[in-house]
Amino acid sequence: MAQRTTPEDGPRLGRMTGAGPEAVNAVALVLPSRTGRAGDGFGTGATVRRLARALARRGASAGLATYTVRVPGGGDPVESAERAARWAADESVRRHGDVPLALAGAGSGARAALRAAGHEAVTTVLALAPRLPEDDDPAAEPEPVRHLAGRHVLLVHGTDDRRTDPELSFRLAERAKKANRDVCRFEAHTDGHSLRRYRSEILALSCDFTLGSLCGLPYARTVEDALAAPPPLGLRMPLAAGFGETLRG
Image 1 (tube, rainbow, N blue to C red):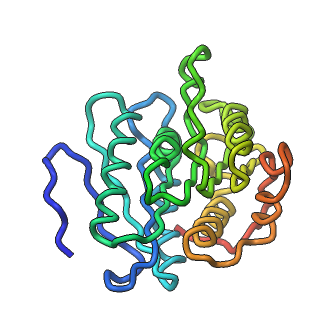
Image 2: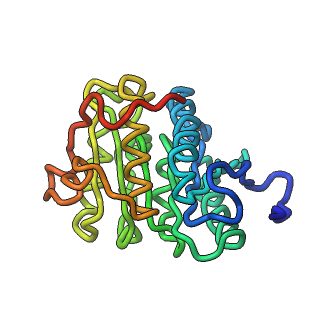
């Protein structure tokens, strides 16, 4: 299918991977993590690339198409990523029609995914080590969460993250859970911002949650328990070593 023309400095979709163009049942849009914020290191960038490959590989048989969103430079990096996510969601609808859509990202890309989740096509949000406004300014207003109602939301954070405060993502999840039972959060104990220590487990968890939410596949028991558990249990779920199968990216 021909790609809609966009300005040279505008957002773009990378090459579609996973499902064939005639068999798309759902779409995952993966947002880059290195958006210009200090602290969005190359480690989370590598995580996002591996996540896109894992989703494409695991989701192909279920009809999941995966795109990496290319975010233009200039302006506020999070706002640019959010605008790109909204544009990409519109473009996904244009290309593939009314199929469920996931937004996924790490670091600032995770924050942009959370912000853009109010788009009517979005049903699923995956936020890895999200960089929230309070990370940069303790006096900043917390991110809104009402627009997350009706979405399936997974947050993952390393407990030893020194760049983005894991307690802030817990507070966001706690507020979101009050209006939306389909919110869960996992903690990777002793892992840092790059999420290297539990990389295979995080990829397996992300794929399990995304394919379960978008494609109706059964969740792993641990994910079911996290969604069903009341706060704070379902928002501080430990990510066990060996979760899921080992994914090579």
